[in-house]
Length: 337
Image (cartoon, rainbow, N blue to C red; front, side, top):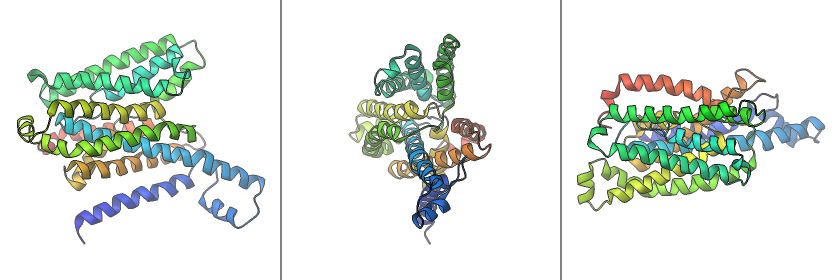
């Protein structure tokens, strides 16, 4: 059988298997076997609770995690294609940190509770600003190298992290806002319901549609800006649309799930090794793999220290940090990616 078909089948199969696994495992004893028994018997009080746990707690949490992971992975594909840099990702270049600091300011001022769109719009604005700064720096000759771009991203992350820490300091005496902001900064899917999904899916859908439309132009941009210009690709317009798309995808994920790092770095690289650098194919399978990664990581977060939950952002950060070190030591292998 064709190796591409085998890899595609494995990615799709793992994606679909992650849903029943996440629905089955959790901090409570209810699982799919209880759901099957429920269909063949009269519902008792325990079965009513089971139905609530499975359909009103776990299912929306799984769907939110799927969209968060997919959108962050898709943003990573766009970031690496836009900067023509295999080490670029929303977390590394400061996009996630920009959305985080904007959302933290919403917590601090209390504006986030004024309207349900306040937090997503603030996260979107922060992502646009931070990505624009890095893109502006990357367009200059002095900031064109991989190492310099990474340093600029780390500096921007440090700056936004300091601002966020300052906001946390000011909220130490607020016993409502401080814990909420702390858990949000760790990144997690706890207490995510259907209304979170309703906030998330329109932005993710819009971002994915935009990413799908511009992805062939990123293939041309990989040949160089001069070649892309001669092939009627409007490079400046492409950069602007890419920034907006990255901000939509990351802003949506950050506003709902908080600061989950490294998905946009790890997943596109793994997917590129599997399926090659063609951006439409890379975008599709990165979305699937990103969804699978976040869903399965959330299963671990819910079950490792059950009944206590760990924030999924912590587990993914550990995985992403190890992968990032490996990537730095082997970056010469990806210089042509």
